[in-house]
Image 1 (cartoon, rainbow, N blue to C red):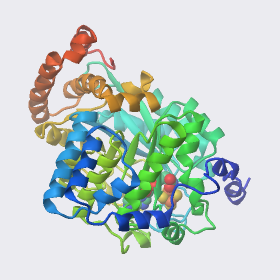
Image 2: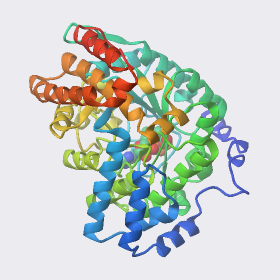
Image 3: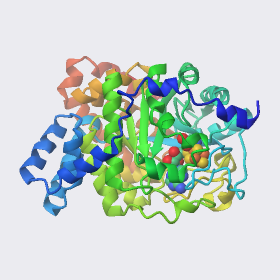
Length: 499
Ligand code: SAM
Ligand code: SF4
């Protein structure tokens, strides 16, 4: 089959139509515009009622979200930020989960005007990692101290589902001795960011042990979407993408992730799109997205729309959009990436983000070769704002009282999908995560941390241990003896023990 023939048979119309509600999808642009208009200048008392609902860990309605998006009063904005942090603490406590993006291929049949991988960018050097190269990349990522990756693929028959399945197996197969000489390290969860697929293919990914399946809609605005993604390309099919993670849920992948590329269209509109997306997943499957992403557009070589979009989002608006998403979709994790500069990332984590990356390298094969982006400009998708290593970012967070977690237990213990969301809502998952955060941070401190990070890390662990010992939940469930024994065994060199 030629690439053109392959492209023509990807979209399955019946796998879109079945989700439509009387022929309509869940993005009603006129209704979004009307709602944003109707909710202008919300009264302070109404805003406080909405904040109360967020604190009860309930997904907000479009009207409530629009009201929050329209708040301009500095004092009320501050209340919203304080509440966003309280919501984060209630659901996720003080932990931040770390991952590394692993770019496996930059061949792409699409032509997204903002992306360095687009087919027409002739400056980009194309490469699809062989399985040996995937193994070398994985080794290099593990040696940074990571235990969780997101595998990223361009859309092309050479890197389609069978290649993904093989690469997941290759990544999971690697075990490395740790630098301390004690125990081993490995990747325990592989998430995937890849183009929309049909249910049968998604089922293959599920069988291969995928963690989260992530697809960003880029922009929820149809007109803007059509300007940026030629309708003749696969990605030009707006609805095929809109229902990508619905199909994943249908295929059995319980943790799905959504996102919008902020800077392509009006940021308030995109937040309303994300909210509607989350609510439609709840409607269809009883559970919303595992995570929500809000990457901001970065400059990319050979990608004309990356530099001169009229909708670029300021730092001030980035703060506001994170605050509103945290309040509107309180159960979902929020991901901030190394696209952001260090100080912005720190700020956005403080406001409610729960996952981030570090030691990030975007070039295909760049971890194994130790290439920084300046040395690899012809194989990257966009430019990073923060190239700091895991040790440094973990130290900064520890200094801010936040614990770096590599926990992957939820998914391996069946705490996924609806089950995990109900536990998050009730504050129970947070408890298990606290234990696993301490266990995995202990591994990191012993195996990879610099003396400076160990110093602040040990203080944090001590504090966490005190909180755990004092918390009636753990004693009531009889979890303390097991936790203490796992902690001691990890200190003695055993690895990958989780609750
Ligand atoms: N080809 C797959 C797809 O389009 O779904 C994989 C995704 S792509 C390699 C990962 C994500 O990077 C895209 O969904 C897009 O949101 C983001 N991205 C692309 N160009 C970007 C840029 N210039 N700045 C920031 N993020 C960008
Ligand atoms: Fe290809 Fe994805 Fe980049 Fe679009 S965003 S050009 S589909 S890799």
